[in-house]
Image (cartoon, rainbow, N blue to C red):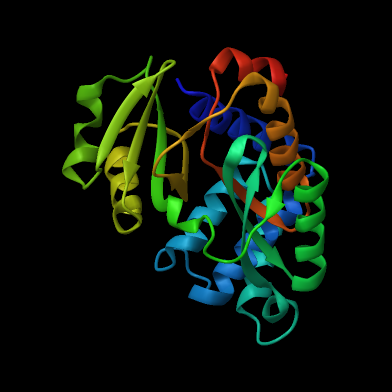
Length: 249
């Protein structure tokens, strides 16, 4: 497994742990509210809301919290209208390209915070379009490779999955955004449990990073993820898994 894939696994586990502590509930709430505002309060007809609710449930968010977030999003005016989605682009140590997805009520404040994190940790914030072309929006579903076989995942291919890879005991199913929910439903209908699923930016190519830059890189990415307004961070690095374990530990 490449360092980049290993980092994705670490991020997923960390997000669940932090959420159960309450550290990420505000981010999950904001994502639900915006999804409900933009696409309506019914997850059946709103794929973004369905995904946001699933993530909240994975993090053990109480049902009442989820319902309040939906109600806030579907209500006229108020807080939901003030929340804006912003994509920040920049470079990290080692020449790594970074995309930062944020939901903010104050673009100026968030932009200043993101710029500060980049500049204080060996990176630089770029202009819109400076690195986005290096990423593609894809659906990614992770399946337990010890519990299921490749034959069990053929339903995903039939439903439109474009790639299935395996390493470190897991399968990773990649889809186009339009096929994401259909592939997930096909797997679930076939009795295959999905460990994690997300629509996220995936790098079209990876940049090798030496151990000397890996520590600074991971610190920068973690600080970006810890920002209250940041929902997701994507980067196109490739670090040896053993190096990543040391610097991320």
